[in-house]
Image (cartoon, rainbow, N blue to C red; front, side, top):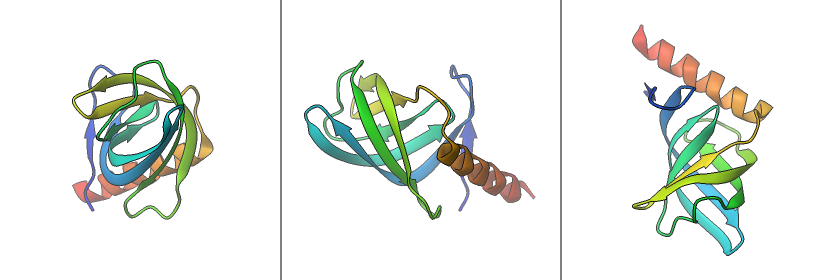
Length: 110
């Protein structure tokens, strides 16, 4: 599966991916479709995004990767069905997913 890389106003690469995310928020649990992931956070498409500033627990899985990643995060963007979640620190599980995505992206180039 080909994953694409984007670099914009963020400080690290973002990988466009297919996957599922579960958000545990103050108002309950919600699910969404993973849009992209990077060292600093992720973006999720969902019906009712939480408000900016809300702290939450995130659990997500990238299609094709065998493990789920769990992290705390904070909503930094919430609009038009998309929610941007920032991670406060690096996590070893996240780093492994990013290495796997980078390897797949580089392999697709050759």
